[in-house]
Length: 267
Image (cartoon, rainbow, N blue to C red; front, side, top):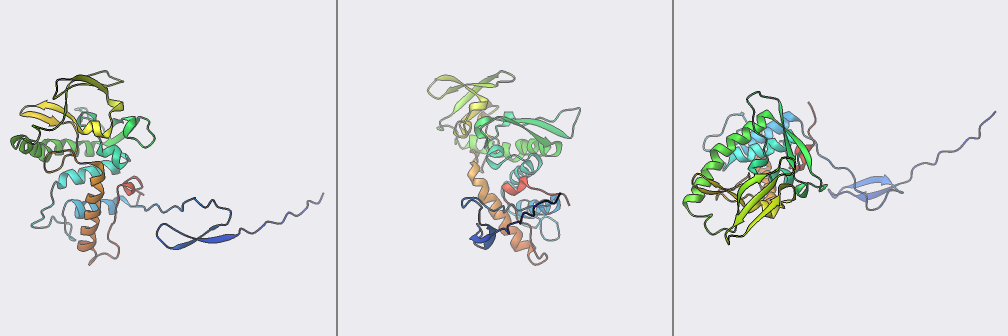
């Protein structure tokens, strides 16, 4: 039995502007509000070069530059390594509290499990993340060194004295963690950790050996919470440094954004 021949209609294309301003061809039937995929990929080797040069101040020879005055380089490098290791988004990683970071265990392990609160995730659902033991160790090193230093300086200068804060007095619950707090007016309350917003998180403190300390993990030089949006400037400055330092020896110096940390390819 002979089958009827069904002609295949050629795909009709049309030219549209991409987000970069260039013209690209797309099927004419494609939805007008659909976006072309412009994901930029980074190899682990290029990412490491970008971190060492852009965030940690290494020169084109891979050696730390003399006179490098990068502020909080350990904080910046550790944050980028966290995004790269765990695949968390910028706001998710930037909004972590110290008590949400996995702790290194004596028995070791290559990866450690953490939990993201639903209100800080893009999907608005709590989810698990995995960070390498190396990155967890880097975070602990940051907390015990440069972070502790800016906290002590802020306490000595009285920067926390007049801040509105909720001093966390205890934590209850295992699967549903709840922070119990007291504010400056003596009001007592409690907030489920999974429901604490970014703004609320920046106002949580805990009583330390020398006075109140922020629970917010990433701090600026004044010892205050480093806002998630500020990380864009850190990455931009690192890209500019890589361009200035590596352009003479590389045709394409490494370039990275927080989103690109989630799209690393093996090489």
